[in-house]
Image 1 (cartoon, one colour):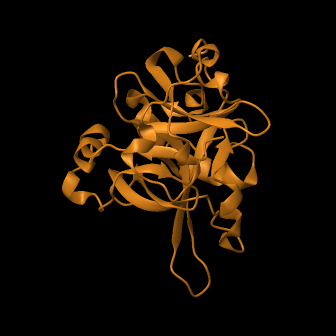
Image 2 (cartoon, rainbow, N blue to C red):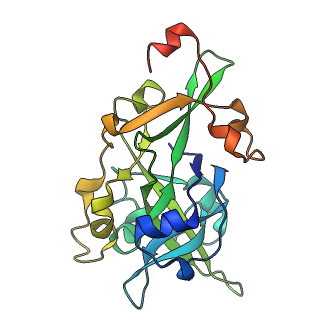
Length: 234
């Protein structure tokens, strides 16, 4: 799964990376510890213009047909193998695909029954990237519409599998347009739901404070030394 991520790139960097005019982007600050149920920027296609836009959404998908928003607590991730058939995600997968900007995602390696060590996974190039996501707009009775998103996950690549048995789907920059384009709803781009090449990524042990959602500062991404035996794995 993917339960935490970091987005340290500035709005200017993200505007250039995703091809959106910076003056059209709603304000948001970097985050070094994005957690479920927090509000994060998402890139999608505007319903009217078909152009890319940034929208602020809550992490945890709430389908448009849901009775209440509580379902969002268990839908922070969607397994790539299930999105085409599972009712929770099926309609969004056909019609509401999006990108979630990030610079790193966190996973925890279990050392023993009491100890887990956090690792951050980013690009060797230092560039930002995007998770494949789905979004929904839920309208409660008598309330304001709520827009939410989920991050798709897949099998881990050779780097991520040393820590966890899943990883988020990371898209190549050249595939952003095809992922978001809504063409034939019967043939969404399932071929993009694959592990990202391990040779383009790097991982490092990071500050254990990332385990507390109240901590959100650049030091969370600072590399930490690990013992010689564990170092051989990375």
